[in-house]
Image 1 (cartoon, protein in one colour):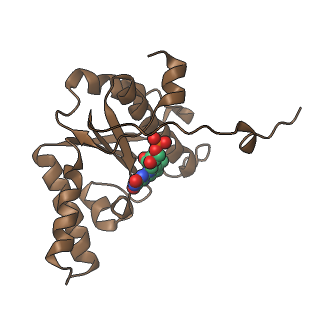
Image 2 (cartoon, protein in one colour):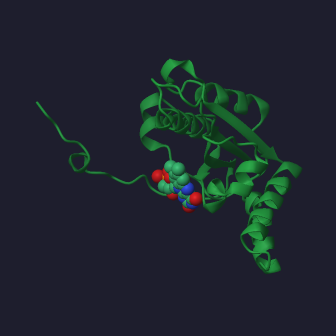
Length: 186
Ligand SMILES: Cc1cc2nc3c(=O)[nH]c(=O)nc-3n(C[C@H](O)[C@H](O)[C@H](O)COP(=O)(O)O)c2cc1C
């Protein structure tokens, strides 16, 4: 796949099957992620990779978040939370590890950089014919989940990237009218 086709045709895949990306594919993905633009080379990126039992540990953390929110949460709600990570054979949580009090690089820039790293992972997954879907949902912003994953005060959980083999059909890439998005001063 040539670069322009990749950039213009990447799309998400919600239906994901085993096996998880292999070591070689993951290395290529992380190398792409680490090419994210990075003001002052702060490297504000951390990746937490979940597979196998790790997915169940993440599910337990989601269930714990539900219990903290509502100690009387019904078992069905807890079970729903527990099962969420098993929608894919692998998840990579992308964290913006923010260097605080950096006058030239405010927090927002560091979070954007981590977002670019997440996009790099998605692009490199697509380029290798893997399926990928960026999800957040309420757990990405939940204090219990943040603590369980070791996020510090200013850090941001940019997203959970669900990864695996393509298990369905990609939606057609939408045709956008560029003029709706681009303002030209000339
Ligand atoms: C920061 C971020 C968080 C997202 N969270 C979710 C989510 O929790 N659930 C979901 O269905 N889609 C979520 N999406 C959107 C999908 O990842 C995807 O981009 C969207 O379905 C459009 O598909 P496409 O990427 O093929 O254009 C999120 C996207 C971003 C950038």
